[in-house]
Length: 118
Image 1 (cartoon, one colour):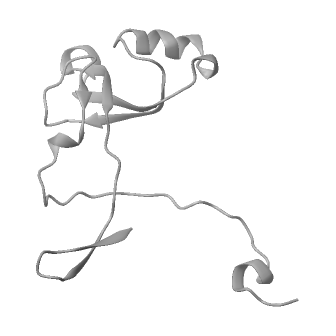
Image 2 (cartoon, one colour; image 1 turned 180 degrees about the vertical axis):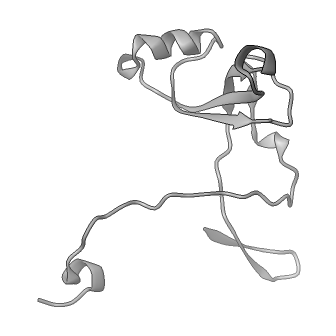
């Protein structure tokens, strides 16, 4: 979360997101899988930490193993296996719904949580 200034000097709150490059690792169709979707992967993973099933799955799309894999149903763009999806799919000023997860810190004591002095 940050803020930017417009040319007329107004401050606008905005969220900075990192969007890509994401690689298309699987294309699911109604004929083969029963529904249409694209599987996108993001963030390189160390080769030694990837299991052989992951290595073979990513080898089909000619890319290295990735950390994050997400499937998008009824994706509006037509992409082929191995193509990349970058931030160019968004127009300037377009609004995007983003969901984030906060870092869980568990149960905190009063000193750490509220800065009480013991």
